[in-house]
Length: 335
Image 1 (tube, rainbow, N blue to C red):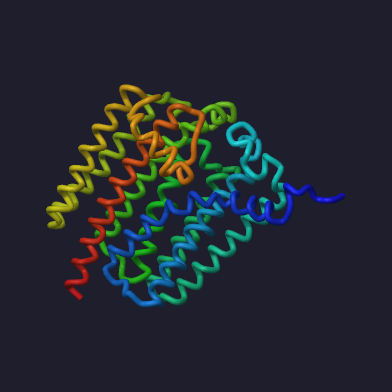
Image 2 (cartoon, rainbow, N blue to C red):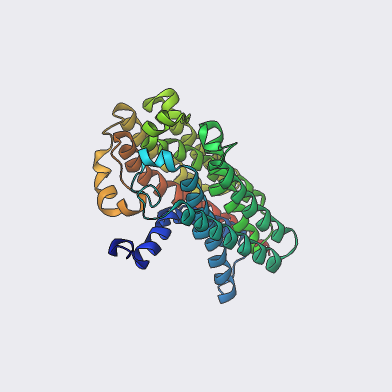
């Protein structure tokens, strides 16, 4: 039997790549960049740039890719409802092919982690190895029974925050220098920001989550209350970042963080007044500017979240990197 043209070699490669969900890879880069900047020790050499590329591949295409791939393997029935166009439920990849996809991504992530750990050596090397192995383990139990952390928001959101925000930041900090005390604070704030955003991202799968017995916050308390919880976490992150900036002597960055908090509050009030259609002036950015990265949704509350996500991510990214850069400069000056 001849293979249909739509399922040729190129289409298989595309399906495997889609299973790794490339749009999610970039989500770890801000944390990696922040960790590197906070170390204040990266040099402008080919060696250090290759190290940065290696840790991005480890946490991005391989680590994050594994988490996306293994999630699709275990959530086939749920995806038939929530995302029927994904590679496995759509029939473009078999379940066995999906399993091999996740195994290869896992082995590549582990291999890079061991290589970097040996190359860096000492406590810093152990931090990198422990971080990626812990992130991969959490990614597995996030989707796999019997634990299946994603079944309940009280375990799923912290799992995502740990893997995407906390250990990636610390690993990048350890890549070029000793773990800075300030880096632990910044990694923790990235953890909580990831928690807040994953809570809102669950809007898109609320219907399937309810049918599948998954306890997302939207299923348990409704859309408006979910916005309230997430916004409270986001605002607390900005407030703590501002406090830390001032306490570390970074006056101008602290003022920028407060401005970011104020702008976020303005947007949040509009969203709470209209959870389905708020800040519609940002829709153009979703459709034309960031649509391919953020995705699109038929769920109105999720589209609202996507509009808010663009503004919030830009505000937090600028302030997070600004403060991390100031931390790095502090340590450059004492070396």
